[in-house]
Length: 194
Image (cartoon, rainbow, N blue to C red):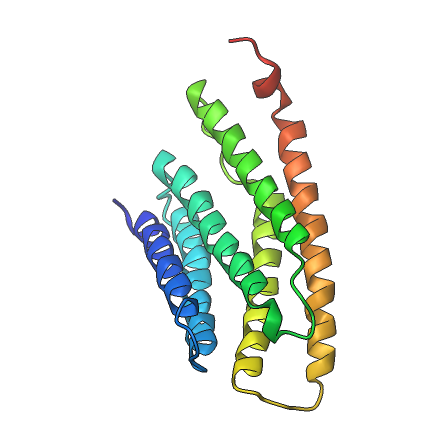
C-alpha cells in the first residue's frame, strides 16, 4: 500500500477518533480535541491527493479509498454537529445533512455500478470543490461548537455564526450541484442494459 493510500486509511481512523471524542459526555475539551482531529484528517485529504498526483502514485484502490474516506469524515462531522444543535444558537439543519448524505450515498452507488461494469470513476474537480466546501463548513461549525463548550464570548462571534449558516447553504448548493454533474456525466452507466 503506497503512502497516499495509507493517508486515506489514516483519515478513516481519525474519523473514528473524532466521533469517539464527541461521544464523551459533559467534557468541555471534547469539541476542541475533535476540531484538531478533524483538521488533521482534512490535511491527510490534501496530502494524499497531492502526493498521488506529484509522484504518479494513483491507484485503483486510491480512486475508491480516497472518496470513501472523505465521505465518512465529512458525514461524521455533519451528523455530530446536528447532535450538538442544543449548544448552538444557529442550528445545523438535519435536512441539509440528509441532502448531503443522500448525495454521498448516490455517488457511492454510482461508483459501485461503474465498478460492477469494470469502470473506475475517479474524483472529479467539482467533487473536490464539494469536499473542500464541506470541510471548511464543518471546521467553522466545530470551531464554534468548541467556543460554545468553553463558553467563550468574544466580539464578532455572532457574525461567525451567521457565516456558518451561510456556509451551510453554500455547501448544500455545491454538494447537490456536484452530485447532479456526476450523474449527468455518467448517465450512460445508469442507462446501460449490460
